[in-house]
Length: 617
Image 1 (cartoon, rainbow, N blue to C red):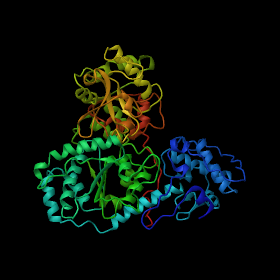
Image 2: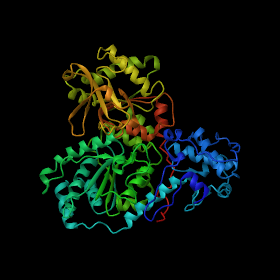
Image 3: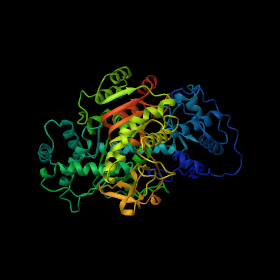
Image 4: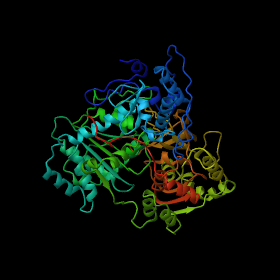
């Protein structure tokens, strides 16, 4: 093993998938990277790096290397004592771009790039071609990777192609078609096609917008899988998983409700109380270690894995999932390819759906008909225009008198509290005046205030404070120092002991059963009411308002969505589309027209090479 392999922890791939080994400091999320002490090496001292200017990078990227990226470049400078300023700037950029969600850095975006740049980088002992063990990998398309992310991408592509190229599962076609006739109406052609693909392939993607029947389809696929696998010696092992605990709770509830509709159509009953878990739970990942319990060497004992909200799964987690699932077990990904991409690096679902016509023809099914929004509804038309990038049409539609969607100019700061007062009083009154905790929680989920950003005058933090003041002025609550009756809270950290997960939402209410003391009330995955003392709660925050990112996987009867007063990097087409489609019956948007147009005209860009060229197995 070479010197830099020992320093950076690079391991070679095994026969199937990758031995992904320990995370590298520069490959971890920014929060974790900040806590990692860079390795202390012997002399020579760190040479000066003379960074090239980054102001010439395309303005729309606005990705500027920071101290952590500088430190990574310094580590490489210690490994390669002849490292040039040009190489070190490339190292900063690839680290910074990964931190911004990209899998790699395209050399064409290098400041003042010229045709000889790739050759000069490859002269360094820290840069290599794919298959060579170097900290940085440069492929033939001019994409520069951190080694681990090249490895994640390559291994995921190999696993996808391996599944597509293997012999399909053995299923009696006549039996399957007869069951599809029973479970699906003749008009549900897309859903029927999705179920057929899921049963007859080891890899399947079902994508569709809100209300297109993804959960309904999965419930029927579950029934078909259980019957298909029933003749095996052991009971079928089908795992339901999601990226977050909140999404897992919602999937559990949705599957439970959807299976009620088909119970009378089944010859054998479905397994009762089927529960979704997080992907981290499924793989055995803990916050203390990036190495999962289950991997390519010790695979999951499953016959199928169904992943909901797959658009939120980043490249690293998806690669670990595919490595851990046996090749003779089905993987079914479910999600909306047009929603926001994952917080961490990659846009895996989007890449799979957009980058390979071969995969699209064989394993991807798109559900196109919405059962939530009527074709002529305002939400349906506006979301379609936004999704297609037609800003003029979206603005025009938002100006029409649709009963379910409208846009108003963003109120100036000095009148924002006054503008909010009536909206939030009407939105939260039913929750704050409910007679019991069950009704309070249900009523609270009827309305939500969504923001694009956390900070700033139109962000979550500021609006939470303004909402408290507005509701207090309406005599609907009396805010206390920290906890008060009626305070809505969102859990920020998983607590497996309490079975509370990041994104779970509850209410602090006076509990008659506890002598009027405050208790935090949540709905459990089984729909039962849970109560906890506030002192037992994991990290949490007030949630009158929440970010659109946090709202993914949720739906509310009515939504008030507020965009900031200026364009920012997080304002994208997908963000606006996701926020608009969280509403089931009505959505009101407050924004400047210029800000809205800028967002619609800016699709999310996540640079990667996934499935853009044939994978090498």
